[in-house]
Image (cartoon, rainbow, N blue to C red; front, side, top):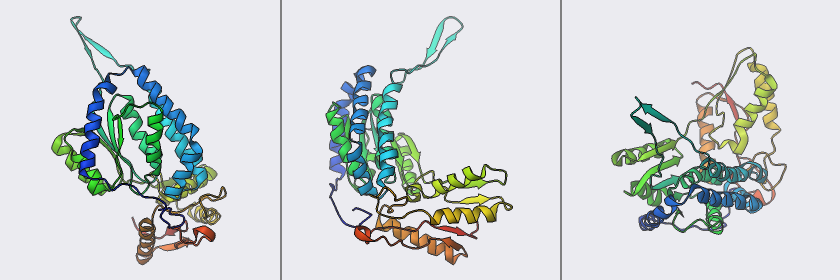
Length: 353
């Protein structure tokens, strides 16, 4: 669904455990060849993927904006370039890897080998679809592992396009397997599969706890980046303009759908009235609109369900005594986006810890 219009523009497979079994089998078969490939050859393939992402920047940015609702300029300047850089960085890193060794009383030397672990699972979120998808996949591939990856079912398009790019770059069949579908039918059987040796997951805390439990029972390695937004703390002796502009940026970039979002702002009492007034005024100046427009600063949130969740949180805040300083409503955008999922940038004060 295009969240800026609310209209369906495509479909993805509703995969299940059988598809996971096939993907893991393909990855397991590809592992001996890929892991034994020289670092120089693996590096060249990953650099080629990086270059092809860069060459297809416009197509990928269009797809990311359409799928996620973010302004197209943001996808063009941040998401897609960073996806390219993820592959480039790890392609370079494996060619310059070094480690330490330690002698033992002149009769032995201790050293550490870093070997690929096997087939790994990468499960990525919807807020930075290709950016975080590649941040997981690139290091796993660079170090000789094979990957079964599940992108968010809400924003699958750029993952689909990445598969073709990887084929064009010469990535061997079975090294990367992208399986589309829901968490229960794809994510859970992927994590439970006995041939999956490690799991990298970014997403909600509740799902992360479930994955941690599955992994613990099979002694799988995990990397879990879960929901944890940090507050901004503003002191009276701060660099005022920098603190103000950074708070605005961190609060509303990507419609606030980012792990770096300052979802709470604590301001020293003597500075609070001025900071509050200035932040509200700058927030009111943010342009909410069609993600295709270069002047748009705030696009659509990712889905109708997410919009309704945000609006319900605002109502709960009001019920608990919070005072809305700006925003607080579903935003109305004219033209083709009149049915889109837009929320006004909102600031609320007076809530407890």
